[in-house]
Amino acid sequence: MKLLNLDHVGIAVEDLDAALEDYRNRYGVEPLYRERVEAQGVEEAMIPVGGSFVQLLQPLGADTPVGRFLASRGEGLHHVAYAVVDIAAALAHLERQGARLIDREPRAGGRGAKIAFVHPSDLAGTLIELVELSET
Ligand code: CO
Image (cartoon, rainbow, N blue to C red; front, side, top):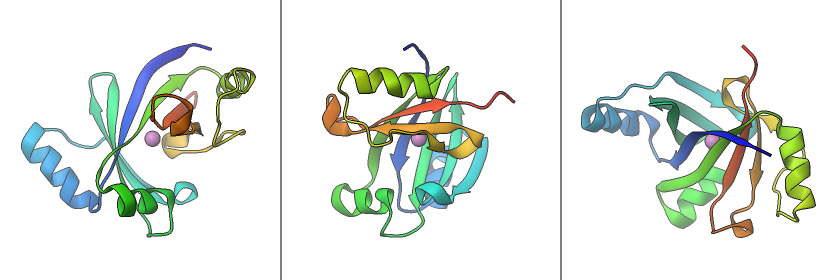
């Protein structure tokens, strides 16, 4: 298991257009990608900052993980994502360590990446996302 990079921090927002406009005005940054990821029930925008991204997440509906997060906690930091070389090997390692996995198998994320989540109760109250970026 080796973490390559802090790939992104995910922030839940009510209104993606408004949040992007605020980031643009306050910090002078622009999103590099924006896409609807049905598998996760979000529309997301990725803002590059150095070698990492800020990922803004707007839920596609109230009955989605990010929709439920917003209802209970409001806008704010949702997860931290680390890039790994081999996500299947990383999940197998975490399982051997007794980590509380949300995903035992990788699933489809934005940018064509494979992703998996580890439950916030597993370590320091932080939802962790592992990301294996595609080769392209
Ligand atoms: Co993410």
